[in-house]
Image 1 (cartoon, rainbow, N blue to C red):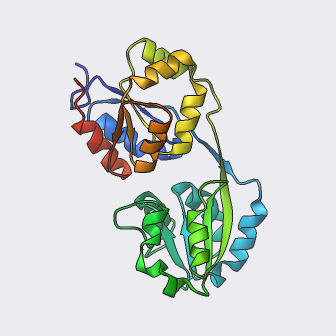
Image 2: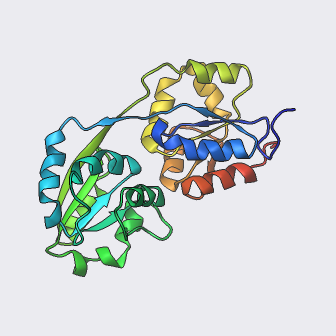
Length: 260
């Protein structure tokens, strides 16, 4: 007897970095589906390890330390917390609940996080980051290489001194896209989950003409309006915007009308 559940017989491609893919994959499996792991972003330590070492030496001088992703936590904290606990006077902040959980697992308590919108805009709406609270403060932002500058630029405009520390670097998938092409040819690929605009660009660029044609016909589940907008710009047609977090994605997958 095959698996049962609302996603039985469905293969869902999970494109998150491998270290972050397991929770969503388990939810898909619990609903009877098959999670095909195909990371579109490879995560590696930052080239400039000295930047993290310098931040570690100065950590207690910051009033606020922002972590933009679980990867930032995973790569920064082993350097920041060598031989010590998190400094009591430094407020930690995170863009989303996954990053909060990673910080909590590492012993960093009482993290600031947006209540609903899990991005830089949501973080900047918190009263703790208002201009009257940020003026004259020293802030560290732990992030990957590149990325948006909105958070740092806005906090500087609010009067803060902001240091951006590269904790990790991102790159596109190292292997070929054959596994996706074979699944499409065998009619064994029902949907993709993409949780990064950067990853979506890698997906479209990495497929050949036949693969892109298949992608156009495949439901694409995304957890943020900015990713949906990127998908539209890239010409994709079957875009399903879900709530953020793994729970939001799985709810979107379960609610989808697969017979449409």
